[in-house]
Image (tube, rainbow, N blue to C red; front, side, top):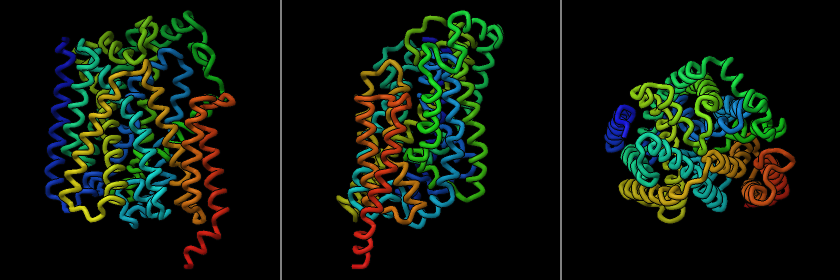
Length: 480
């Protein structure tokens, strides 16, 4: 085992655990466990909000799967990935103040809390919780696979042993610290991601003899590697453009991102987060995907794309520096996993158990159940990740699409269109998720677009038609 690489990672994990224990002490003093455990008491400043959004969104897909896909497809994948530049901007501009004001008014702790109060429907709540649990399991499995592959590449351990180490590390600090631990560690992890990306990009360019030389090597191997169309010409203009829906505008519908728009302290913090988050996301996404492309001439013939990042770091950097840099993807993966774990846990505890099973549960019993559910979910994801796919980015993007098809219109139109009602929301969720699964299974990338585009359009149509057709019925029910 390469201890020069492993030691900096161990130091990083120890720091993360210390933050978790610090956050746990705050939870013990809190009279409102749900607010603190799932939202950090709504006290995030601008820098921490920006970094927690960046670190949550910048996941194993970005740091492990993204460079792997770029290694395979070339500069076309870098262009496609930059659709993510607008992520933080769209989330905070579209949701931002209005969403924070409304969720505070509703005393909402989760996205489903907002939907429950806005639509006053048991079925909206149950469909929302079901969608979160199903699709976020896929997203979490992608992260755990990425973390395990990173540890596997560094240590030479078996995949199963590496997965166990990663799972144990994440579960400990999420369970003890909740959202406050997640938010503060995200600030640390986001900073590590930014610095690690910069160091590895510079080292890769130097190892490849400069950008001009790297581009020449790529062109000599396959001219398509330096065009927008990808290695096999499959990145068509309409497909790349449709990615703006999946990883740009549509991110507004991702529960793990929208919950960040509930948790900031004030408008000043939100405005600062908007600027900082956009800059950081743009640099990290551009840097990591360029690293993946430039790795191809330096390390030709890598068969498993998800191993490109760790193998390249150990090739172009001194071992001790590789260990520090590889804390970046570990940070990205852990920060996304912890957020997803909390989100699925809150869906089970807050949205199902408290709303419909035991509304009068005590603060202590809620705390016990929340910790227990988080643990059980972690174990289930561990079992699911034992059989990994070849490229985790596809598993992650599948989960993104399903969540966006379910939530984007009930959230956005729920805020901005007063005539929207529970029938429109239910119709939108059923049509969005149902059509997404059908398209994904039987007709992927219809009309050359990404699979998510048509389901999002169909779910919009279903929301509007469902709300308008039942408008009088809802008005009569309100008068009775």
